[in-house]
Image 1 (spheres, each protein chain N blue to C red):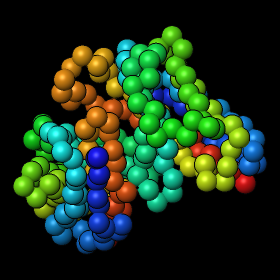
Image 2 (image 1 turned 90 degrees about the vertical axis):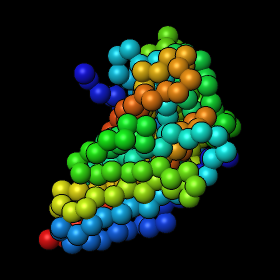
Image 3 (image 1 turned 180 degrees about the vertical axis):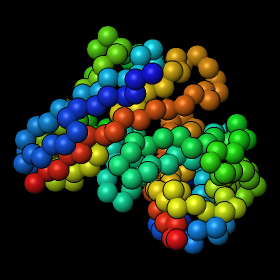
Image 4 (image 1 turned 45 degrees about the horizontal axis):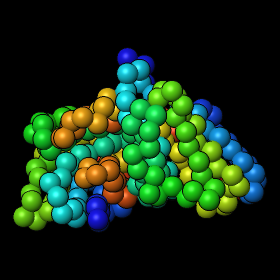
Length: 119
Length: 106
């Protein structure tokens, strides 16, 4: 099956500019995740969608970050305005889990990531 | 709160030597533990999960609830094992450790 697709792969912007990342999950996957991975750290969950509803966005800096998943398929993550500390890899991931299982056991598949450098 | 600790940033071993990548976790509920691997220039991918009790590429990991650990082990390291390894805990969300770089020298 086709993997999780992300674009753009690389982006360099100046601080205070805006940027948007796009993600197409694996077909049929109900759950979509956006992670932020800063150099030297493990991925940190920003937001999790179940179909087109938000399950967890507790670590999303909502004053500058926004994400949507219209129609429960593709998703976009936007940063506006960007700060220097937003430089990171933004990983999109998806899993089949439709939320009904108590113990998921579902594999989470990751995209290749979108590398953001804010200068 | 969920927390994953990988105490070693870098582990360097010779080919054929045993490998143990340490992972400790903190979680009040019943955890799901995973190991993810990222080879050079590739995407992050699942290596193994504790519920499967499987051996993948010669790697195994046993969940020790008493010590809250989920260390990754392999008896004989191979050069192709060189990669970044992340331990992850799924409670109400999937939380990753900071990762350990495994370097296998010839």
